[in-house]
Length: 133
Image 1 (cartoon, rainbow, N blue to C red):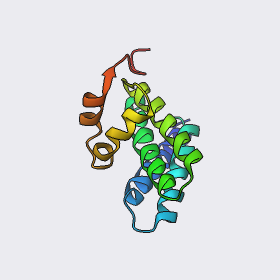
Image 2: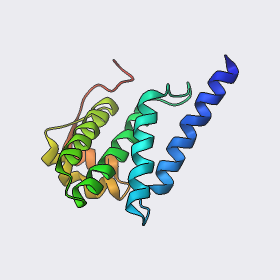
Image 3: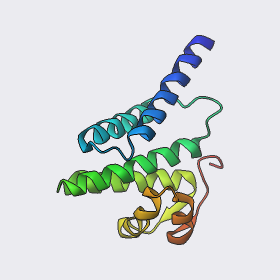
C-alpha cells in the first residue's frame, strides 16, 4: 500500500511539475501537450494525502485557463469553451464561483500572470470549497 501511495504521489508531482514547466513554453504544441496531459492525468489520479483538493483544483483551473487561451489562439473555439468551463468548475471546487465564462475571460490575464487568488477575489464570489463539502 505504501509503495502504491508513493508511486501515485510521484506521478502526481511529476505531472504538476511538468505542466508548470511548460506553462509558458515557447513551443505552443509542446505546451498544449503537457497541459492537456496534466489535466487528464490529474483528473484520473488520486491526489496524495498531503495534497489538498483545493491545491489540485487550483492547478487544474490554471492549466485549463492556459489551454483555453492556446486553443483560442488556434481558432479552436469549441476546445476553448470546453477548457473555460472546466476551469470554472475547478475554481468552484477551490471555493470561488464565477458568474460566467465572460467573467473568467476578464480574469485570465491575472491567472496567467500567477495572480489567480487576486483574480478570483475581483471577479468571483466565495462558495464552500471541496474541503468543506
